[in-house]
View: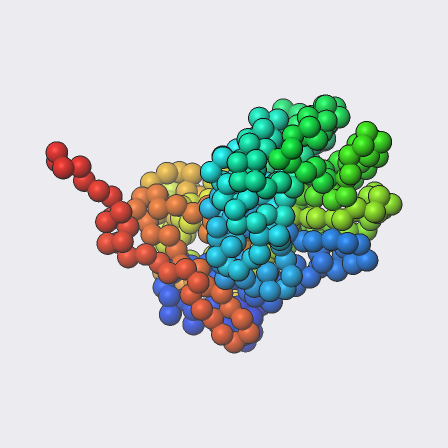
Length: 421
Ligand SMILES: *Cc1c(COP(=O)(O)O)cnc(C)c1O
């Protein structure tokens, strides 16, 4: 459920007409709904009700500070995967003790930043990284709380580019080596081993892979405790999928996911962390774009939009499907027609949808890409010297630009010409 609905034939974000935002900021742009963000966070928080837990929003999904602040004020922690994300979370007012640091390649500088500013825990992904965290912590005279990310070797049954829990993936340490790695961690005086971390992938549409992984984590918890480690926190990662196509079967609900967590791990008495990103932000955002041309090709018609692959790369990168709807609601019974929906970038990959049925559209009409809130704005680029598009946050009947569109001068003046030219 989201808060992007038609009212009297016009698409709204909460109580604001999309066309009003378009008139104010120009197209294309991203728009997020505060109510939807909060509702999705609350679903996870409620799903773990009765267990000691923290929902750490995986901010790489959508990292604007206004979004972070909205969620943090509701009680969310943050999962960060870079020093930049750590600083962004701090800038949005998230306290260090609610920030967990994930990622396979944390540098000594990033580790130092987090240890200095305060950190809930590092999710360690390798022994060399463990050694570096230990060394930095000793240098700073602090002790770094860590979990070790284990790779449970389960098939997440998702797109290959976002599966992370098979043995061939670069993430975590093989679960079979856990005893050895935990013993090593326990021997390092700059580290305090507090738990186990696992994250098997993104856009999972079934509970079964999670359950397989979490059962392995339960077993490992008992084994590591028997070996003398004080395992008291389990970070279970993110990855619960969202319905991109309204017609498809819906993925499991957060409440079902929470019930499964309690069933598989509840008896261990550990504090539970989860790191959802996509499910919180995905359906809380639209990308709104304008039709520039309707072009009749030899065997098909093209809708050429002012939005492109640099603004929303998911279709090009992951073969992702997005519902694309007209901002002006089509009259009931209006005949739809198939279009290839494309952007202006000079690549055939700049195709959002092929032979998609749409109501008749003319230049100047607005369309909205649904489910674009996660892995949308954060993955955008300035390819083709196209400005990063603005982000807008709606709250009831108010809206605010939360990232401005840069001017061409700002973009172009970032280059510097060497003096020999
Ligand atoms: C990407 C990522 C997440 C979030 O995944 P979603 O599918 O967006 O929920 C959580 N944890 C880690 C370690 C990640 O890399």
